[in-house]
Amino acid sequence: MTWQPNKLEAERLEKLQRLRERGIDPFPGAVRRSHTIAQALAAFSAQEAHGEAAQPIEVAVCGRVRAMRSSGKLSFADLEDGTGKVQLFIRQDRVGEATYELFKRDLDLFDFLQAEGTMMRTRSGEISVEVRSLRLLAKALSPLPVLKEQEVDGKTVTYGGFTDVEERYRQRYADLAVNADVREVFRKRAKTISAVRRFLDNEGFLEVETPILQKIYGGAAARPFITHHNQLKQDLYLRISFELYLKRLLVGMYDAVYEIGRDFRNEGVSFKHNPEFTMLEFYKAYIDYNGAMDLTERLVAYVAEQVHGTTQITYDGNAIELAPPWRRLTLREAIRAACGIDYMAHPTAEALYAELCARNIPTRPNLPWGKYIEQLMGDFVEPTLIQPTFILDYPRDISPFAKGVPDDPLHVQRFEFYIAGMEFGNAFTELNDPLDQEQRFLEMARLFREGDDDEAPLDEDYLRAMRYGMPPNGGVGIGMDRLVMLMTDRHTIREVLLYPHLRERDKE
RNA sequence: GGCCCUAUAGCUCAAUGGUAGAGCAGCGGACUUUUAAUCCGUUGGUUGUAGGUUCGAGUCCUACUAGGGUCACCA
Image (cartoon, rainbow, N blue to C red):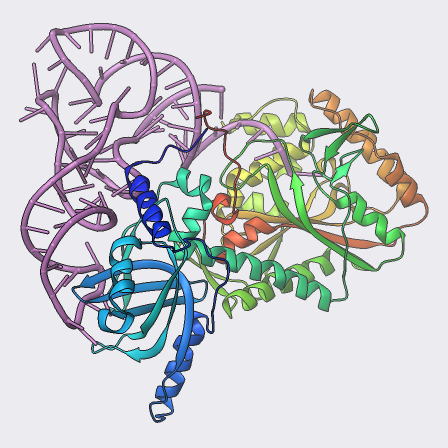
């Protein structure tokens, strides 16, 4: 797959050749940069604001050429770096004929330049660099899509652009180079994750790293990716969760731990699923799921404050208030309110299946009781939960790591929380009774066999850890990608992943 | 995996079954305060791939590939 230059690229290659013939290195090493573009603009504005005598501000700025406008012996260019954009004001009688000719003939849109000169304001008021010398820093051999902008009534209107979703994902570097709003999404992603860290650090949590390659996968129900260690002749799994490794650390006398990292699930891809995704899990000793709810709502509100400066955000046109306290209601109440079914009136899988059939709700036979309840949740309740809501007390048979609700054999102390009609996280008062945990594992194994599903491997070492004594604790898992979606008002996970998973394209 | 939609110039998009076009970008030219600069001229296409129907296919049909949507799957 060698590069076949198209016509536009061939023209740029010719320019490259001409530059070399004139002794100009199109990819020089040394660069002089005295100001970022933002600094240069700020320095000039500050001087104007103080009304100081015109002491010229000398700058050397670097960046990519985003636009070129030429009128005879005077030209303008927009130069952009990672901090902003500034206009270059290029007069032939200032830069000299040779440089001016170079600019007009052999420099292209998207080339990287170094421009030295003095800050000034043009007649039409645009802060600019009056260029004294101009130097090519890197030639762009392939043209990027041209994007033009115009200020209309204070709003920036964009013309042209780069919108093909597939190409944007496959060539994210071009997407980022062209679309400033996409760059902003990933800045907010970084802010979101660092805010999560800061919050948990301040709450006394210890950040840890646990294995991605696991001998036994667990902590969730999902098919894993399998890999192999050659030297050890051992199959290994990419983790589907870090739950069991983190809770072992509570046995080891850390009171509060968290991990932010990648999980891998060998399942379908959708607007909210990618085969690898970023998860946050945190566990704290001596709290139950009520304490976990307090932490969760404060965490999300803190993140919004840090990213947006407010807990009031807009997602998909909905105004959402993230400040605590969030609404809390039980799963049973939520379902009863949404579709009129009280699942406790149908306390077995068979009875609940019959009820769904009687109401013409499409479903499947032979699922565990809790699965039908989960289906009702997904069908009737989830889409309605726009404002942040904790849904509490889940069926025991689909929650093997959660402690039971006292005097209630069918429910466990588990919550999920929903915002904007989407699930964001899952949490429990963690089960710390090793004998009960073993029974749950065996129950799950039986249900998997009945459901003709892959059997979840039994983690004996986890049970051993628990037998040494695990403090009572609450734990929460939050999908970080979805949190970033919420913070950036993006409606597919692919918009918040730099390199989302795509099918391989035909070999060229 | 099922169903629906999409694929045309570097980019964004047009084109009743009847000669594939525009804007931007590019190339040549004019222009010393432009900012979607403007003006004149101009290059650029195996219409995703492979078949089929037809006198004639970008357009209709089939398959494939990729993407999007949706359903299924996914604690």
